[in-house]
Image 1 (cartoon, rainbow, N blue to C red):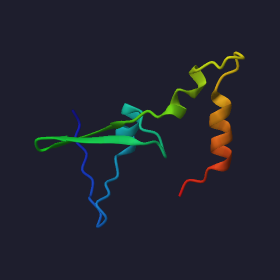
Image 2: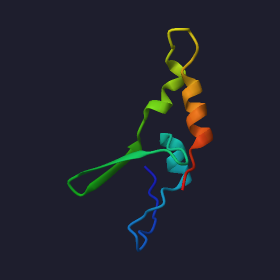
Image 3: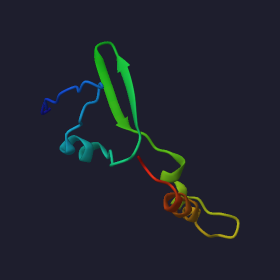
Amino acid sequence: MKEYITTVTQKGQVTIPKILRDAVGIETYKKVSVKSKGKYIFIYPNKDILDIAGKIKTQNKKPALLAREYLEKGYERN
């Protein structure tokens, strides 16, 4: 297992190295779950309803992905 060193900022933020984000599927602007056990902190990708929207079929057989498209067009990330 390769070890990476990063800095905790004044605001308590930590940058996860890109190689690790790519390895576990953490994408830009996506949510992550953070848990602790003992002296260890675990960070992993968190799925939300929009991640599965393309897999859900509506009654008229159209993918529910349209909901995601409408949401992203009107939603601004800060």
